[in-house]
Image (tube, rainbow, N blue to C red; front, side, top):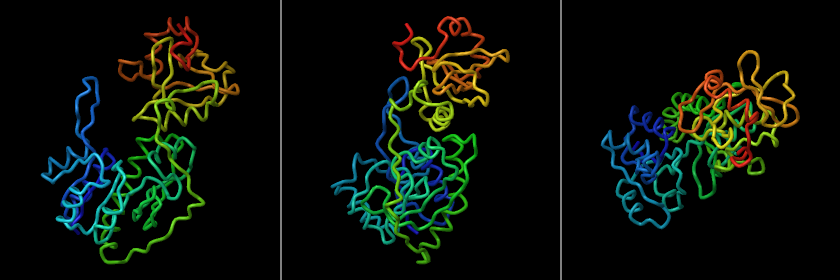
Length: 321
């Protein structure tokens, strides 16, 4: 098949690579415009653009597809059999949806209709789901509302984070995507309408949401937040005025009965923090702003006096002066 691929982050790159290794033709790539990031705030291309240019694939980076006659003209000229969309990040309007012979197929990182929207992997972990998976869906004008063409479920491990779950989903696509596309090209795939009454929504992760509020959540929830936000965002707190990302943590089976945010250094030289309802969390890995990630015991070596002086993590930089 002649395919136009639309995607932006590393999760998309994995799927583009699957297409490139198959017998399908990748005729063009759509990806988001270069964004400023990093300490130098320099313009940086998306991971998909980097791969597409390396493979000499025609690459287009429109700010929007809506009312974009130039992109419509380009796509009409290519005349693709299919547009495959994986974490593209832009709304695909009707004029694009109806253009390919086989429509636009989305690889969505949840078992639809659960977790429609922008952050399905993070929400799956944050809400404590025991099962996840990917859905191959025919796109319509709604937000992940199109008919389901194939779902591939998988179980979640107790220590699953967003990085490991993304890899697990990639493995599902490695096994199933190319076989699915072959069946689709032969007209052998049925469409199943979603039950919208069962829908839940994976809202975009906000900066405010990544802060740990020790007095508002129990240790179990905070531990899920740490896993859900690793490594892309990082759940953060403050030690005095210094921002710290908590990268790995484990709920204490036997709580230390600490007040929210209160820090205890145990005899085993581990860091324990109080949470809501007398629960507590052991910090296994953390990262002080401007520094590299470090294990909890290594962090203690350079910061023990400060911890003993301040005695707690805070949920605001102004709480501890």
